[in-house]
Image (cartoon, rainbow over all chains, first blue to last red; front, side):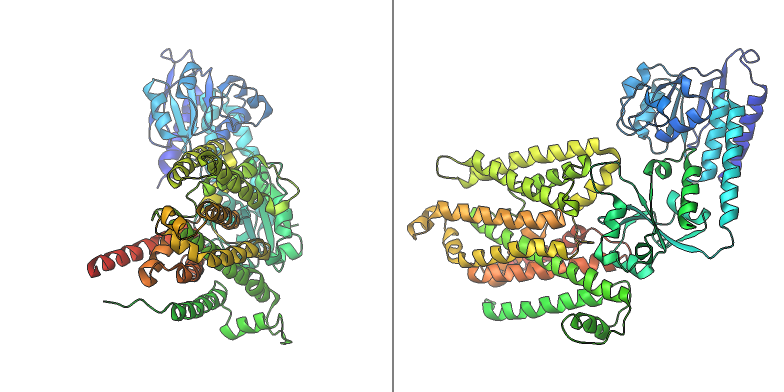
Length: 297
Length: 340
């Protein structure tokens, strides 16, 4: 239902990109309908970009747009080049004034960005493009669109080809074997885990695993008992941002109640850099590779 | 119309109900383990029963359900008994164990550890220890602010409590704002719960609950006297100020210990003593043990509901206590209103 108009929209853009140069379009603008259905008029030659989401910052830099970046959020710390850019605040608490003051000709946001602030920026006459990122395909699409908007289509297409080749490699390697039961833990006390319809679930399945919590919707707190009862063979845990606390894998390993869980008995716990999985950006394929290595270790 | 129930009978009955509730808590759960098998597993810890069960079943019963049920009972008992004592001390029906800002202080302490990661080396106990220390620190500040010479007027104490609590909770909110990607850890703590706490936490809380309960029971006559007002109590030979001090210190320690293991579980400490008063009257010699038992039963059942209703999801326990307790309490109030 949704993919069809989106596909048309993307291919139209690609066609436009193919023939659009500033010279051929003296008006100097392109129009584009974003994932929320808002039609945005954007300069054909974008020079100043503000990103309001870490994933957009990563994608923007991955298609070679880093030099155009003039504003980012506090959490946009990757790549290092982006971290040097001026920040406008948190993804949901940023200063609208500051964004407007940076005089961007393109503002990037996702459906996670505070929508009221997005409205305010639009009211000030600035073009905001909002992306909805729920699957790996959404990320590829986002990369291609951004490449088109920033005039770096070739880089974007090359990146997507590279990422999807890596993805296909992992998926074909993990096909066929015995499915491995996996638990993804975001936080250990209480046990906060990834259920169905999460990026983590998607990665587990693509890497050839079975999420033992797939009957739980979204992210949820679950009982220790359910983990013991469902006996995962592998546990993948988010490494916390706070460096001072003990490591999450050590805490899980030393928890007496979980001692009988196969993953813990056989010490098959992997720690994931949370940014890799939590940010629907180009590094998701690296996350998929880590999932695959961990599940098939 | 109704004669007051005989206190001793009520206590015996509640003991039996608590035992039954705890048994239910141990037997019911996601993995189906039969009653006899569950009993055999528990029995095997002190009797030579041959094991015909799996290792996971043993850890589910002995390391997950049993400590959890006991912890629920201890937390419920602690909050209810502290609520009962404070309501009498302040002669204020709105008083609960979190009144003097102890929960706000504890929340700030826990959040600080979760955000900054200070307290390395104490392992899993970093958060509960910080919560405990900050909770007690808060009470101390409130007490010192409210103190006029050697006396601590109740109204001043309550007002200082409100002011300091607001300050502490602003601190927590600020940390929440700063916490970014650690946000959910703090939110979990603030929601409260007793899932995933093992025997360590039981041992942490047990001495406080036993010590506190014995103390409160031993001063129940003074509490009865205090119900007539501080001045009357003074005439009845009660050393009001020193009693007040003892009660405040004891309540702080017990609540602080409970909050540090369970986070903030509202409602139990506020409503349980009221329910009990409506049932058995205001005599503290009965009110205290009955509140203790009733709070324990309430929380054991609430915890059971929290993990069974949407299994394997766990609901925050505070949602259950308030969702079921509030309408029941309203019913009790209305009924009493009609009888009066």
